[in-house]
Image (cartoon, rainbow, N blue to C red; front, side, top):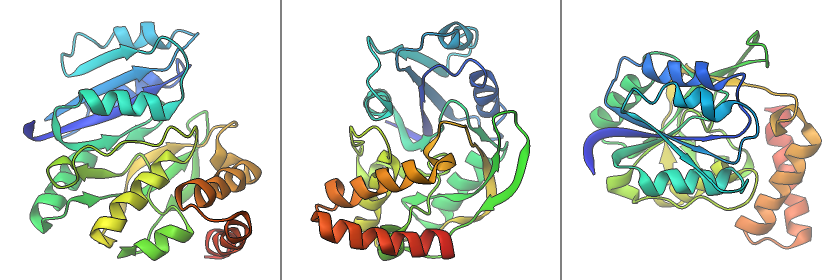
Length: 247
């Protein structure tokens, strides 16, 4: 494990329209001590050939799965290869602002924090700003995270020296929320950097763009991760709805 190296975990699947900008946003970081591990999950478009154009940068790795297995499997594959002290996540259609890594690593070191995240903003598929910044509580507790996923996947970073490598759920959706819950169970509270350091792309087929899909996958988190009964999970969803839509 290399001291203060950041391992960036990036699953990709049919992202030919976005992957180039995503990689460039990593290359543009003011913090240059990183490795980017891209695991392609069986793309059938030009995603792989576009990624291969960046492999002259020896900090970027490409690994290909034999078949489409879901983002959980792709992320776990990347995590198993990672050599860094810090694990960060960036999906193949999202973007980081140039000072994202520097600010978060400096924050974690100066405050001796093993996990942090930040605010982020949203764009549409064409890159148009939606005028929306997603914020989080200044001190995030496990209880707050239980009711709503306040941590944007593209902003979270954790310290492997403290947690070890955390296995991602094999569920097709909401693996990130379950990972943050695992982290908060251990450290009880987490503090975000209270500014937008990343840009989330809201795509037409994403669960963030569909309230029905969001509810379905969040219900599964209460059922499968928290091991709640069907009735209790349904009651939890009422609390989720109140927190998510009326906060």
